[in-house]
Structures are given as C-alpha cells and as structure tokens.
Length: 385
Image 1 (cartoon, rainbow, N blue to C red):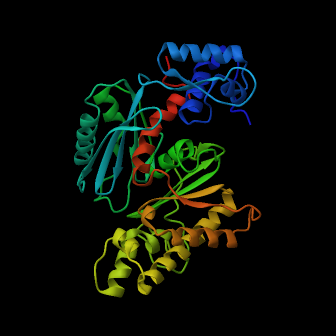
Image 2: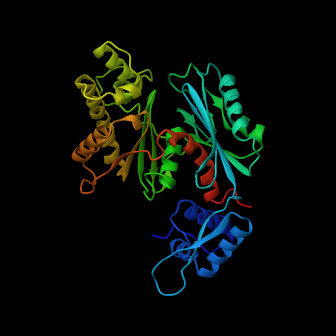
Image 3: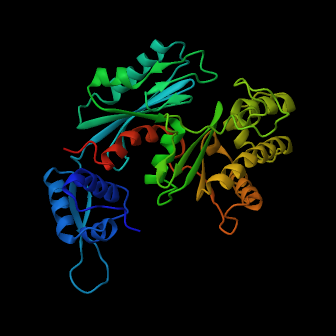
C-alpha cells in the first residue's frame, strides 16, 4: 500500500521527509521505487530528489541491477552531510547519550553509571553526556530524549517513577532546549524503542507492535496503525501495573497483583537468591545453564508474562511482540516458550501466528529510540527547510 505521499505544495515538507524516511529505512532504493511507494509521478519524485541532493541530504550510488530490460536505475542513499541527531536516555542508575546519522548509525556514544538523587543531579548528568557527545560540532538539528515512566509526553516531563529515589516532576525538554538551542522531542523509553524497531529494527514494516521492557520495573511500548499510542492527554501505556492476580501481592503503585511485582529483574534475582542461597545478577541468571531451580523460576516468569501479553494481543491484535532491556539476555528457549504460550492461548486473530523476538538493537534499543524521537520528526518533515 502506498505510504500516502501527496502532490500538494502545502505538503512539500511532508513529501520530502517521507522520501528521506523510505531511503533511510531501505524501503526504497531508487527514484522509481519512491514513485511507486509514494504514489507520486516520476517528475514530482525527480524534483524532490534533486532538491534533497542539492542540500546533500541524498547522494547517488551504484546502479541497481534489476534484470529488467532497459537501463538499470541509479540507487540513492543518505548523504554524509545530511543532518545528524542527538539523543539522551534516562534510566534508573544510569543515563546514555548518542549522536546518530539518519540511518541510525551511532557516531558517538557515552554512558554514565550514577544513582541519581535529585532532579538537579539528574539534569546535570544529562548535560554532561550531551556536552561530550555533541562537542564535535556536526550538523545536529534536533535532540531526542526518553525516560522511564511515568512521563507526560506533551509537557516533556518525568512525573513520578517508582524506585527512583523520590525524583519526580522533572522538566526534561525545557532545560535541554534552553541550553542547546535545538528542538527537543521527548517520549517514554519503551515507546521510543517501539518506534526505532518499527523503522529500523526487527519490527520493520509492521504497523501494530508491542514491545516489552523487563528491568527494574516492567514497561511497554505500543505502535498502532504505524504510530505510537498515546492518550489524548499525553500519557503512554503501562503494562507493568496490569494486574495478573486480583488476590495477589500488593504493589507500590497501590494496586495488587501487578505484573512487575512478579517478573521484574529484582524480583527474579530475589527468588533465585532465596532458592539457591547465592546472589546472582539477572544477566548471570540468564547465562546459567542446566540448573533446574533457575529453569523453574524463569519458566514461571514467562508464564506470568504470557498472561499479560495474551490480554494485550486479544485487545490490540499486534503483529509482533519484541523484548528489550534485561529480556535481551534470555536464552532463546524462553523467548520461544513465550511465543508458543501466547499463540496457544490468544483468542483474537488466532489463525495468524504472532512472533516473539528480541529487539533488533539489543542493549542499544533504548538509546537509539531516544535519538529516533528526533529522527522521526525529520521524516515527518518538521525539521526540513
């Protein structure tokens, strides 16, 4: 189905952004493919490409071999002088920053391990990371930011995350915009991860996506109809506080039986420590082989998670489920186990198997999602002159 390019002077920026998106994400490689995908005439596409080449956003490369009669089309790719984008990610116990090109190649990356104790402490770390990664002075046109929840996407604020040393109501986008003089685009970390995976990762081409991040808490990102889901008031979805047992354990959020109380990384570490009498990190637990006690705990975790995933698939009919954060360390047998359970138990769209995969960018998924908050605005035409 065409990606809805429109011949209209009022949508000039949108069409140019869409052309860049299709080339950057490798959905199209030539003018002919752009014309077919965008539903625009060859003349209009030539005008768009020529303008983008004049700005050095696009460059021509080797001819594409098609096997069809006639001359082979010339390939296009994002040029080395095209705009660059920065991103910053806020997590419990650390923060990351990166600068990427439009293809999401990482040009520079830094990580700061720190247990933030106040809003000022947090924002000083953000500035330190961005100062270091942006110091080379490339053509950076925007900054993406993402954070653990709860967040208000419209206001660009961290609200009141659990297990975050009481840090709350932090304005993220305002101070960054003021310091660097660039547009800043903010979202929840897992929502951002869903977007970068849709455009560049293991969910490329999918329109309905569920991504689940397991860590110090459990979060999710949802893409529906090709767009990230947010409420009208600017709040992203939450899966960690979906109750899987109405008679279950109390959660710090005030609910009972919340998913994250059973499957978040510290809960699994605690169960293993109680069962084995030794403290292992989540990654060490995942790397341990042929231990029936650990296998039982991990299989129970997968079963608990499957209940929430089945409910969401029945509601949303997602095409794919992705796993990120600490879940990227799962042995593949647990990924396959989750896929088998949810496809056996889901009711809606039962005829089509829903794949479960690890996020394609693995441990860089969240930071690349932050950068992609800015890159995607370029694809929507907002940052084009």
